[in-house]
Length: 482
Ligand code: ADP
Image (cartoon, rainbow, N blue to C red):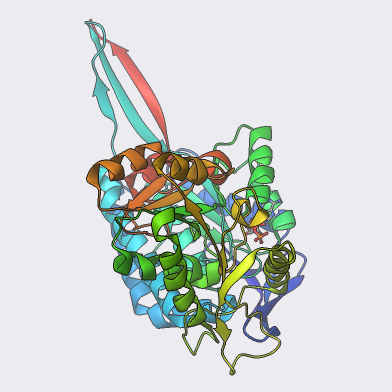
């Protein structure tokens, strides 16, 4: 594999020819290299994107009509499905995720392209009532060149949702994948060229966050930044964007609660409560990492969850068990440390899953861990673990459930389990977050559903039609004609 970026419609080596090792999380061994991008590489990509748009929207990409953009996105979605297994295998190797999850990611990537393909020519402005003798219009324009900083947990899904919407709105994109998971997005850019996207419409610059990522945020030619990643890095990206008044969308961490009332359908809730934290080995920003249970059914729910947790197996991506390994050594140590610290502080483990005997001893396998009676003010209830670790705690009434659920720095997603219709609505309105699921839990929900946070979970919305609006600027045109 050549260590290259994807700039201006072709694979391009890094200006400095430096590389970063690609490590297989299932055994900790190197299996390839990616280019270690520099500010010069980012600059080349931004220039290519600008040329694709043209100075006056007269470049090969900028001149495309909404219909033409939609047709190209539809072709890209279909091509992703043709390359589905190849992309899924690449993603599973690169990130360690179970093959089933990687396949789902590839399907979601195609679905984003399909959704935004159909949305391109439905994006329009308005005419507004104003004083007599005026006609007032609003028009929606693309920002221009958009920067997309992507994390390693769901590269295809997260790039798909933001690049799909940005391209649909007529922007040209520069993507900086995570240094731990770049391979699928390099391939995606190549496929985009194969189906007819003009050179420069979709560029990928690989490299470290502090180098290529920071250079992208600081580049004066980037007109909008979408960032998905950790809360701390999101703050740096937000500050860098503020330095030059660049609009930014931040999708950050979460400590999302699932709230189980005594009248809930526990048979329906139980598998969803477990899956929401073990999916992708807990490395999901919208993971349901806290379960709040009404006191009268607390013991029953803990017993049910413990039984399921004991059966959760981590294994190699090819074994396709409940979970794969964690992404890298740093993450592995961090999760293990948080579990050890919680145990040392006296928190009770109700159950642990297992690791497959076929898993390599040098891989980053973390078994699922269920903690019970977790105090609301403990680290485990307040901080994001980003691993398969669930904190369960009781509540006595609806008011306390709301207080606990809203009582963290985060506000991304919440789940409510109850058969009481009025309570479903009361809770949905009182929960301070970006998405509420009632009697289900979407772990970021569908392609069509706007997604994003409040508080330290970020701002701006990805997904759905709402995201498309975020990738435009609105211009008001007031004409006085008498
Ligand atoms: P993690 O710490 O789990 O790797 P990050 O939030 O740091 O998660 O990474 C998400 C993405 O942000 C990655 O693509 C990473 O390279 C990038 N990144 C990290 N630091 C910066 C930074 N200072 N500026 C821009 N991008 C960054």
